[in-house]
Amino acid sequence: MLEIEISGLRLRNPTMLASGVMGECSGSLIRAYRSGAGAVVTKSIGLEPREGYPNPTAVEIECGILNSMGLPNPGIDEFGEEMREVVELEIPVIGSIFAGDAESFSILAKRMQGYGACAIELNLSCPHARGYGLEIGTDPDLVRGIVKEVKRSVSIPVFSKISANVADIVEIGKAVEEGGGDGIVAINSVKAMKIDLSTKKPILFNRFGGYSGRGIKPIGVRCVYELASEIEIPIIGAGGVEKGEDAIEYILAGAKAVQVGSAIFYRGIDVFRKICKEMEEWMERNGYSSIEDFRGLALK
Ligand code: RRO
Image (cartoon, rainbow, N blue to C red; front, side, top):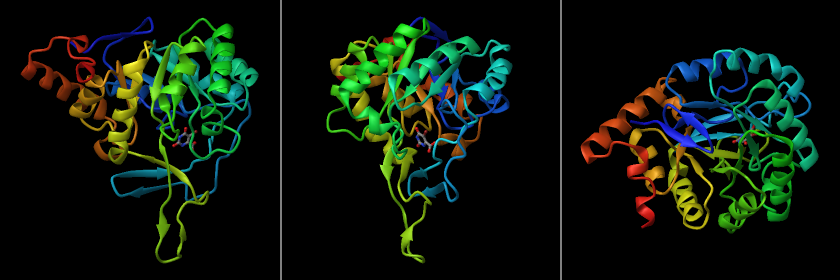
């Protein structure tokens, strides 16, 4: 009932483990899949190892979580071993990568393909990393160029994770499409800040962070709706998906699949199975037998 096809990938259901949430080691990627995810996305991996920012790097705030991890990752060379263990089990794993230019993105994408990733996710949207993410993902020409170059380098689908922190998200989505991208993931966490009343200073070491969880769901749904209204390539919704009804909302806005991150904190790793069960119950109540039966209905 929940099976989907996205850019040639057949997934048992439309829920994916979002990047950055438990995606740095094989054990937790495997656990997320065994807990019901249709696919899993790795933590964003770069060319070199990175420690990330000092603590505090994450804090629970009203309606979600604020993080500024600072792209901690073991680097692409080390990451091969983690990928091998997941790929051996035939788990669909999407390799998330970050870089500062098209050439580095291409090198990373080729390595991820070599490791057996079923698709690539370009991180064009980390809200607080200097020289990476959002600093690149707000420029449509850069985005188009990076997607084009990566598409030339690999044969697996290439998704681009983009940000709501832009004046016109459709402009960025169109740049991805023009570059030959296979899909868009919308959205990454939203640039935000929390100030500690006792110290009178921002709580996070990096001061700014990315806000995720239920507080950003209406922003994510709005972005998916705007993108789906003007763009042909598939969209994966992300931001505040906690329950089956949240996933349904994204699908009604035109998404083909959804990613789940912060909800693991609230509902446990079993959240994938719970969301799928809630989706099926909603579909039964409403007389739908497949996701395509109701996808994009809000757009009509
Ligand atoms: O590592 C992070 O701090 C981070 C990344 Br790369 C991202 O894309 N989004 C986010 O909220 N945090």
